[in-house]
Image 1 (cartoon, rainbow, N blue to C red):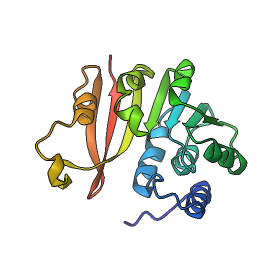
Image 2: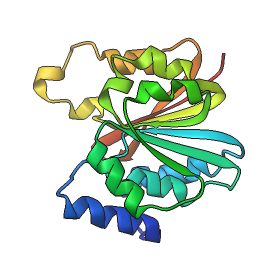
Image 3: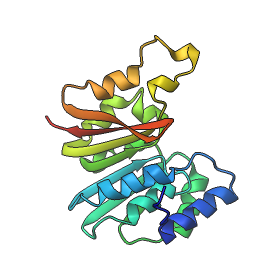
Image 4: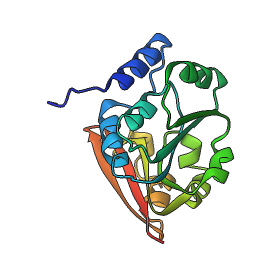
Amino acid sequence: MSNREIPELVQLSKALAKKHHFEHSCTDEVGRLLSVLVGQIKTGKILEIGTGYGVGSSWILSSIPRSIHFISVDHSKDKIELINQNIHHAQAEFVYGDWKEMIQNGPFQFIFADAAAAKTIEAERLFEILDMGGMLLMDDFTPEEHFPEEWRGKPDKVREFWLNHPHLMATEIYVTTKSSAILATRIE
């Protein structure tokens, strides 16, 4: 609770999201985690799937080294056009389209998957573009003890895939008391 520092670029993106009544932006807790993690990536490319209004992008851009190329993709042309007008960063590329169009730009040393389909029905394709030793972060998970009654006792295919993948070392971490994220590294 004592860490209240919000980078200027993040503040700009949060204001843009608020102006457009967008409530699904990256939280400050996940943003800080993103900043710490991507700050450790020294070369290569980072991919964000699901740009939104650029809040997660701004957290990433606030701490990446100059040697990193950052690509963020979103299926909303209006959002990408707005982001391109508001975020100007030499290492950043904001792309309108389907995230799978970015496969040709891989492999990626870090991926922030913030789009439901990439985490679920397209999970194997997402895994394939993660570089050996590369890291993947997915947020917006509900910890099991906070599952609504209709989820309890049912298989969780997303967690099963990512947490038990034979070629990943993965863990689920709490980012708030009622929200978690999956962090994974490709090991084979």
